Image 1 (cartoon, one colour):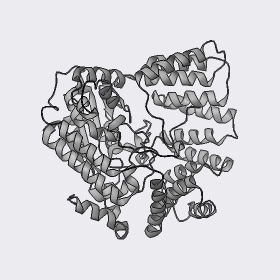
Image 2 (cartoon, rainbow, N blue to C red):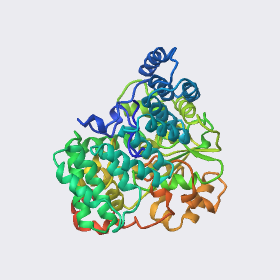
Image 3 (cartoon, rainbow, N blue to C red):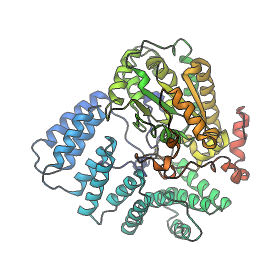
Image 4 (cartoon, rainbow, N blue to C red):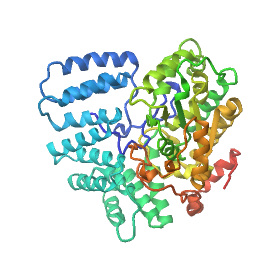
Length: 505
């Protein structure tokens, strides 16, 4: 089965490759995606998948595998054809439709994916996996009540499917009259020796206690869950500090100078910034404007850049000298697959690492950097479980050190990119969304519509950690949230101050 990547794609992919990876090794491989495959490996996998699917007369998992490989190769039209052909065959098993749903989701066919996930539950109604995947799909489409029902069914079938508890906790603001705190506390006490229980249930409990304004107890849950997660990671923040400094070193003014525009790059808008900084909110406003669609969080740019990185030197130097026309052509091929649109948004937070390369290869692309106050930004990451990427987010001291390195790289991008980098401050965006949104639309060459800020009416799917929040009107209550936890954040504040980060709060 091609697994759904967990609670509505909660930023759970590490877009960086090789020595550029800001990741870590985790012995618990169930929580981590497989390493990205090279084009050669994908071509070999394609031949195998084609052989396996040839001649099948019923819908089978092999069709999903074939479509998946084609999609990873950037051949979306061919992948779509495989899915359509498979659905015209005789009825297969639940795994077949689950696999096709996963591919459909990544092809942007979210309603079809939802119908296929539901079909899997009808064919295997006692398999918790399929109910969980359906819950994730319902959430991505904003059908939060249906998502909660599917989570409840998942839990009834398998009380060890801990991801369903966390997803359920995130679907709404819990109330004193209706919450799962007692259930979560009891289950955590029973299964304290289970690593996955401690992590998933711990984050769920922290979120629900926070909703109930039990902040000290909420922090205790977040801290225990984060510590459990951190124990499984083989990670050294000093390595990431060196990598971010190295990126700045190789991407000076000359390396970021705009090349000839080989891809009509004004079509592309990159929304970047740390996770949980407001990138999804900005994406939703932009996609509320006419002629704009989003690819979501893809690694299309890093794939194009690293595919063109040849020659001598380390991976950073090779990337800095990659032929911009080659990078632009490959990125445009990958990004443009899908419904036609005047502008295409690329919203992978980690593209902040590639701002210089983006500016060089795609000189007319808009790069929108979303910034949030340091402590708010760090605490928002600390209280979020990521399945891959952002390994620095599970320890307050490491969070402070990484944020300082990130801030240094952003300072560098501001200096070398100038007006090609447009900075959006989260606090201003939530306070004056119409004014900030209109200015950004003008910057991106888009016609403004005040209705774009009514993000709760935006019907497009959301596959991020904010998938539930974007179904509500814009709110500013997350700003300054850290103050409720200030007594517990000493290690974070000390690390930020030690590394000379200006604490705007």
